[in-house]
Image (cartoon, rainbow, N blue to C red; front, side, top):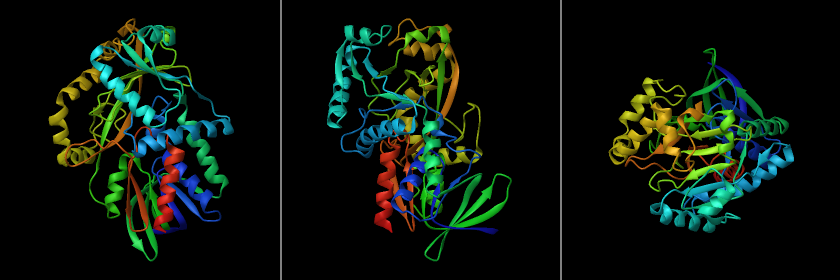
Length: 407
């Protein structure tokens, strides 16, 4: 294996969190050398660019959690960054709709959380006011969040990458980390190139922001096996162009408080499309953008984890519903008619899909906060699903703070 140099910092993962972290480290350590290593041939190939692009306001998350604090801070910073860089980020707003009276208590709790988290301009609206904001939506009551917005997170990630390069950082794509070992006062990372070539790089400190592969790299570096990443495929539908007038901005349900998913929603993207979804289906590969894809190693990892079976035992009814939504456009669209009664199966077309890299503990609990672990000369972002993109600048500051503490 040939050596390919050294760096003060190596950041493994070229998604939005890894690039934001690299950017922050270079800003704090001018003159240091830093290399971003991305296994795919392009940057931001997974969670960053496979969502509806919503800039979350911070309503849903438990007060005091990292998600709550970093989402509110991150959204503020992201809007400012986009304005500086000329990236369109529209504050279109969002309605979280209680479709029935039985959901009003849960809506109350969301309002309490939002206010505790410092979400600005959040207000409760009546059934009549729902129709004023979203003429085709219906419900008993709703929360209106004018500060929720949409952006192209791919463009944001590309801008972060430009910042990294401008500060003297290197970005290498097609560089998969296959081994980690202590080497003097740093780490040696073994790399496999997209053509099968082998080499290595030495780093004084390494940051692992590897999304769906985060647990494997963390364990490779000596971190605990828990939590395990279990991939969930989020499939979307698209409204036909002539029916996009059904949705002005974003219409969300009141989510199940027992799960870290926000439920199927309707969102007008920054590009003008209206996406419906996502579903949340446990799948057999960590890159199963195609529904039937099976990764034998990924499947074995999921099935061998005791938390998987405990999760299935608790939520099998939810799982069956998600299978139905993934298999049938009619069923998927029908579930969203609770909020937009005029919606019909004929109004929708197939849409994109994404993979949520969701951490699952041994007891079958889906981890509902950001998780960062430390090993020798390294930090590992073990759980960073939504709202990680919204929170990216604030999350990068948190990670850099912990690097400062560790070095």
